[in-house]
Length: 310
Image 1 (cartoon, rainbow, N blue to C red):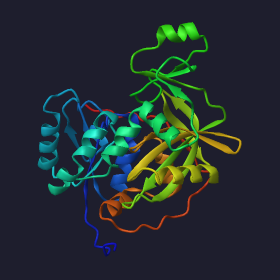
Image 2: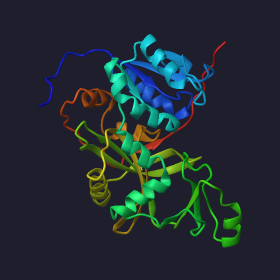
Image 3: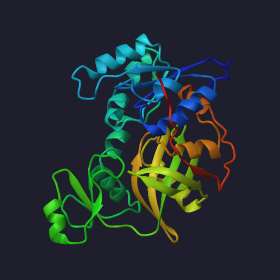
Image 4: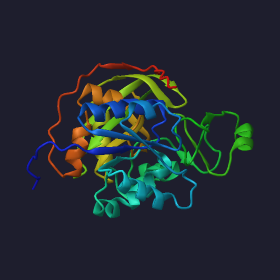
């Protein structure tokens, strides 16, 4: 049974890697919802130090005392909710979700099993194959033209090499190879409730990409994508914001990868539906959520903004 709705209570949200240029929309969404946006980064030399409500300096991911320090900072700064976005930290957040909740810090993230599968592109490919989900063929050998690191973000280390000898020469330990998919590439912004059911499935076609990150897009309704994402979600548990990448070729959808976290391009998902920040709170409070209608055809264009400080 869902909890009864309560009066508005201001929450303190922690955001990761806030020095990223695409973090601004999330900070603004938190502030528009009436909550406090606490940014974090390894340096205070970032724009978020100006437009966020607060900035916490986090230890580097290589720090042997990383999680002890992070937990101490969360308590010191009275953080209520964490929205993980930094790939290298996702597994750690999921492993500590219950222990942090006992300390009053709620982390909006999927299960450890889900993070482990989808942070590794080889495990992701095996999961798709095992459950007969449409996807590219994959190998740990340089068999196929598309090469990418098993663990990595965006387009870093990704290339296509048709020449088998050159591909073999450049193939590194930790790489996988895949077939090249045809069709239109889509990124799907998804939000899942506490019972792992989809609230929103919003496909967007990229209008521009720089270093694997979207610089523009348009939301386009696609029932075939909806069906594949729903099928996927019945096989493994998602919670909170999830980002699915796929190709659509005529009447077929081929899955590429799943990012079990919030993503920069989700600004368009927010704008075309509603501000997801209050929904994040509802999910953590295990409340039922009724989705709003989606403004199909909405476009997003992104430009970077300068900030100056003496």
